[in-house]
Image (cartoon, rainbow, N blue to C red; front, top):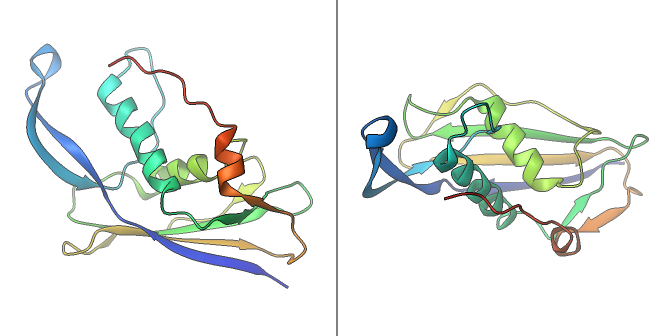
Length: 157
């Protein structure tokens, strides 16, 4: 038996910037984006990090109320199909990683899956996510209970 759920995540409205380095300023406009994974490097990009945290919150708003809890005995598969607005976009693998991080804040050690090659739909950019667990007796976790234990660190702005 399998447990299966599919859902769609619309793009996040992200701020547009102009200039480079210290001259970088928000333009006041927004663009729809499917945001990829971000990790803080030697020179953190605070705007990019905040965008990534906003993306994870955005993902959680579109998730079904119940998801399978991944375990060593019963891993969970998460597959994504990214429909981008244009040829300038995040790597689909990084979009998938960000979604998995949002869905399983307690750890994704037992989550696997794939990202489809980039697809394009300028009129309706989105991510279609499919979550599959192979055993219907898999313990389910209510998303609101899991998120109540999540604490997001304060990020410099």
